Image 1 (spheres, rainbow, N blue to C red):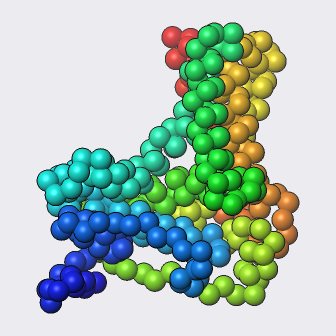
Image 2 (cartoon, rainbow, N blue to C red):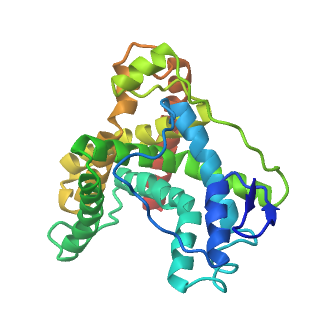
Length: 311
């Protein structure tokens, strides 16, 4: 990628798969001012990916490039801090470190559920005054996103889809993007650019128009999603059984709710596995080994928890 400054026939090249971010960052470091331009008449016409596999491949490339810029010499907290205001540096740092969302979301999708399975409460009781604080934080985050969607002309359906794809991306391409950037940093991998396919076939187009996910994606994307939905469903039923048996719903309500929330938002994965019969469904050859392995690991974790409680 090569860019030329106004009045100066001087260019500079760099190796980055997020050349748009790095271009803007370097320009801002050289004193240029960014302007938000949103004319009423669209100025550009482009195409976007329409199937899950290409979305996640593209996301992996983007998040790898963003995180790579957060750990190299162009880090906004070091290189940018001396060339732009602190607030602007922090905003750009938030963008480069955005892929790190994968780690809290993996914890959010596994730890409360595993503790629910073993009867370990992590959150305040419903009767505890601190329960209101946790509820407020959770609901305010969801409502803030919902307000942003409505203000930009979106609908409730769009909000649900954005929540859904955010979860899918966080447990797959965010994680793989971070790992890819770290491997490049230590010299195990080299920077590469693979163009994303934006031309869907007729079957993919039909699924897209029907608002159906095409789960004929790479196994590295499908396996984590299947494993997490299996964990949440298994721990939910295990938690319900425990609540009915022991009667500690007051303690476990939040963890039960989290499992239900994740299962509900990711319903298309369940639909693609158990209901759909089209070519975009999840392959049983992939799903069965993943589900069995996850259930076995959950059973081992349950036995380990029971053993630790006895001793």
